[in-house]
Image 1 (tube, one colour):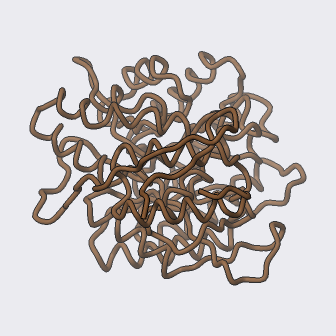
Image 2: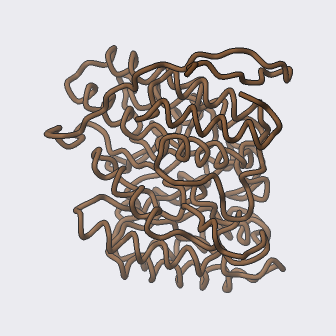
Length: 389
């Protein structure tokens, strides 16, 4: 049987591609815990393909497969950032589904000793404008659920707050109240509008310098309640400047899926930890790279992680909010789930050429434990699109 496969290029023309014969080896057996950086993978959820639902219905989740994927990440030493945008919060997964996900993953983390942090938002609110009191109450409800599981809380950016707040003072008021009542230090999440256009002007200004000032002021007023900040602005220099302004003891967790190797490696003045959606498909490789960094081998870390950037930039290209489709696609090819179905029907959010390039890039990195399985599944997708691979 031939090993080549015909794939569409960016113009739609079919070209022959020969997949690699052997995967890369990422064996965590006996490996020490990650030491020099805290690393979270923002994990996706696995849809139930047999549920008779529409994109407007509550998400139907395959809980066994979803939790199995989290055990996979924990087995490599990564933390799991649960119920974040990678899990389709606000894009198919509603608060009821997210709460169940948090409870189940929290229990699983306790059972296996895995690190977990969970997203706290306001997505149970109706889409119509809400008062600041309603926004705060929604945050408080979700915070209570996360804290009840023993997980660390990540205060996510809120569409409702962005729509309601009239300026920086409203953000200071809401976040100040939440931080004062949080039982343990939280992670604050700044998600840029490239990930969610509804978050434009977060922290009270579309001027990112002014927004950063407000963000830093809120942190400085409550440094004992802020474990760290997760920054997803896809701007490496802005993140570096921000992390240099953080109070002592407050970490920076990069959410920059374009520039993560340099930000994690850091410079003479500091570095970023990681909380990344791209570490869903890159989990084993990323963990191995960080263990190299733990030995002080920065060059070896960069040599391992830099080649992954083209794949990440491809998956996160505009419209960036649809990056989740590529993440789930690669999980299917890698054998972590038996189907390519997503909650909300988002498997249709990217094109066949996009999938073909993602397959080539991931295969080149050795990310598929069974390259022949990945090739066969890529062939199935091509067949659905009328291509005889």
